[in-house]
Amino acid sequence: MPWSVSSTCPINPVHAALLRTGKVLFFSGSGNNPNDILNAPQGSALYDVTNGTFTRPEIPRDSNGNPIDVFCAGQAFLSGGNLLVAGGTLRYDPFFGLVDSFFFSPTQQKWIKRQSMNSGRWYPTLVTLGNGQIFAISGLDENGNLNSNPELYSSSRGWRAFTQSTSPIEQYAHIYLLDNGKLFYAGAQLGGNRGVSPRILTLPKTFTDPIGEQPVGGLQDANNGNQAASVLLPPAQDQKVMIIGGGGNGTTARVNIVDLKSSNPSYQPAASLNNSRMHHNAVILPNRTVFVCNGSGGNEDVGKSDLPAEIYDPATDTWTEVEDPIINGRVYHSVALLLPDGRVLTAGGNPFRGSVEFRIEIYSPDYIAQGRPVISNAPSTAKWGTSFTIETPQAGDIKWVNLIKPMATTHGLETEQRLVDVPVSSTTGNTLTVDLTSNRNLAPPGWYMLTIVNNNNVPSLAKWVTVRG
Image (tube, rainbow, N blue to C red; front, side, top):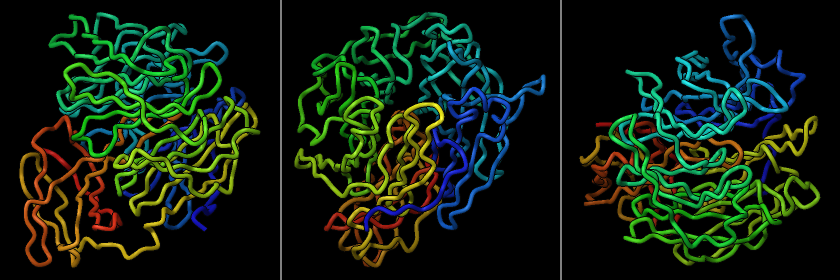
């Protein structure tokens, strides 16, 4: 069976991140239950996929000894592999955002409190930039208002806020780093779009100047971006973003793609999903296809969540339905991410408070059972603009070499995931020589999964590599 139930998560797995150790960090703080606020320090679980076991790192408390609730924070990876988590829940109903931020260290397997942001954020978006800094935008502030003043985190300076506000970009906005250092808001988010269309954002040279905004048109069903999925299509060098499904006025099967290399970018129609859905997840597979799972045909309606997964092939602009998962009901607060062996982990589903799907399920694509190429040896570090070698017995049969950034996802939002092409420049015996881009905006500093793919589109197991200057 391609789907298998692997374990039961001890918490509501609202947030999930693949760490460079191969373990998966789940966290949720109070986990969508205000009665559990006192248990917020126990609101994370570190999953060893190989052994099927969990440890429970404790989230720090504030200076008064009160639990800090990371429920509905934002997350992105720093270059050293630590996960930066910022914001969370200050209060429920109405929701106010926290100013707190943390590292989660994969090697120490612990949470570390960091400098607070300048203002609160609940449902924010964090994006890793080409210089290794983290850009934070949107979310509700500590008074429950939309936070339209972005901030920037650097290891040397901490958090610094931009004094000029942006357009009212909605919470958990899907935003991607482009190869020119600009950012693209894809038009997917949580909730309505407040009248803000997809747009390219240009960060100013100073924190007192306004952030530039260039609207991008053409998006069909623009009011159905609520809990849509989106992805920077592989490879990242193509600079194409795809928006998939979503809700608002019902649900949609709409799929649009924008070519951001164009001098006048505009969304264009692509092949539609076989099934309308929202609350779903999109995962880039190492064979350069896109796997979509979870979600429902009717908002948080579990009765409409009996949907097969679908795989999109950019080369043919086609969607193919694959096997139905064992578990239905993965709607709101569901997650999915790529594992180093090429399988996809899915978890969660929390259609209303008190109803949580704790079982973890794993999907094995067809290539898992095929003869897979093997990386015998590769460097642990790759530098921008240089060549490096990969040893493999299948060197003469390799079609692609990929660097895949690990995912850190929640609410269908995923800004970290990208697949970077590493072209093969020569093949000698059992050795490939490959060339890494010199553009750090294409491959931001940090840890990646290195895979090789043969001429039958079958990928290897991944080897962890850190990319830097």
